[in-house]
Amino acid sequence: MEKTDLYYKKMTETPVSKLIISLGIPTTVTMLITNIYNMADTYFVGTLGESPQAATGILFTLQSVIQAIAFMLGQGSGAMVSKALADKNTDEATEYSSTAFFTGAIAGTALMVIGLIFLTPFMRLLGSTETILPYAKQYGMWVLLSCPFMVCSLVLNNNLRYEGKAFYAMIGLTTGGIINIFGDWLLIAVMDMGVFGAGLSTAVSQFISFCILLYFYARMAQSNIDFKAISRRAAVYADIVKVGFPALIRQGLSSISNGLLNNLTKPYGDSAIAAMSVVNRFSMFIMCVGLGIGQGFQPVASFNYQAGKYKRVKKGMHFTMAAGALLVSCIVIPVFIFAEDIVYIFQKSDDVCRIGAFALRCACGGLMFMPLSVPVNMLYQSIRKAGLSAFLSLMRSGVMFIPTLIITANLFGLTGVQISQPVADALTGLISIPFILHFTFKHPDEKENSQ
Image 1 (tube, rainbow, N blue to C red):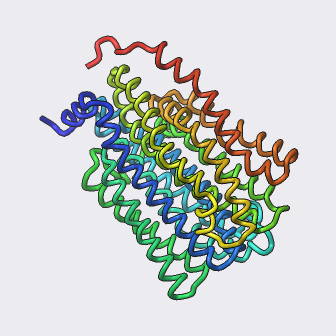
Image 2 (image 1 turned 90 degrees about the vertical axis):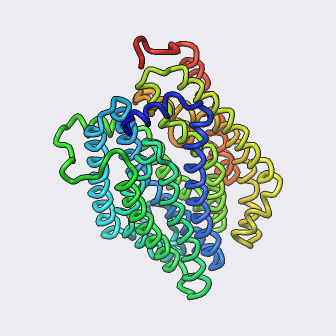
Image 3 (image 1 turned 180 degrees about the vertical axis):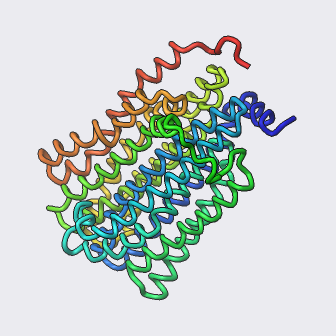
């Protein structure tokens, strides 16, 4: 039996829960390790003071910009690669993966050059105060230098996931994450290189991850990365952008929202910015569980929808929601109880602990709604319903969060800043319910003449 036939059999006959877990666990581990090394930056830089730590929050916004580009290309091409493989067309799969990879390299290089030229105004735009700016520039320089490798790594990572090779995607990113944690310790704690060392460690780890992922893609993927396979058809670029646009919205709005959050937190001082930086990093750590299982569901949904196995797609969505709710609850409850201790690990300042503990408890409440919003959003993106997916992507970080942040910050000051994201999370979860019910009850279980 050919490789494509074996893969078809695996994706359409393996029990859905087993398949999602097998694809979701490596992705969850990848995201957890990635966020652990983000928190390692926060921890080690936090030993240098409030302003250096606040700089990591400023650069978290820049990394969201980079990820927005990468996820659009990676998830857009990945869904199309999965569709092509369901049709047993490896040449078309190679066309999509190669086009996305080299487009990402060009986009990452352009962002790097523009960012380095306008480094100071860029850091101010992202929310730097005058005391944070020198540290943000040191860290930001390295993040920008690593930008092409970061974009290409995430494109490779997403395409490996959509090909059912989540384990190899995990190895590539987790190796870089572990190296970054060690690099933070070596360059900050041992060699006393400060924020400059944290940025250098991030850049080195991104380059190593890229090399590993490129090696695995060349060895394990059914599609290839080939310069000659770059498409000259506008339709290919349109497909990638259309399907990946919701991911761009999610991450792009996240960067805009984080920048707005930093700017609205400015009046309350560096302690408040540092506190919200810790909370955002730790919230992302919790979200990784739901997002990881959701991303394990994406290739299952994409492949089975194309194959006409709609009942499997429905079962996958329901399982992803249930598993996400269980796992997030198991993490959120202890975090809510020990919020002060968690913030204290990253920053010993009394003001940071006071502001951060309340914000973290509020965040825990909002994250309980994530198992409603994430699976249905990823479902519509994976089955190439770009309009619905784009609308759902607008919710959490855009339509719900930005107005909520502006209104609550003006009404309640710092407390409004702290509660804005949880309120937006709750509203987003509730809005997602009709879309879940629509797909469950209005869609047939099978496509006629499906294989």
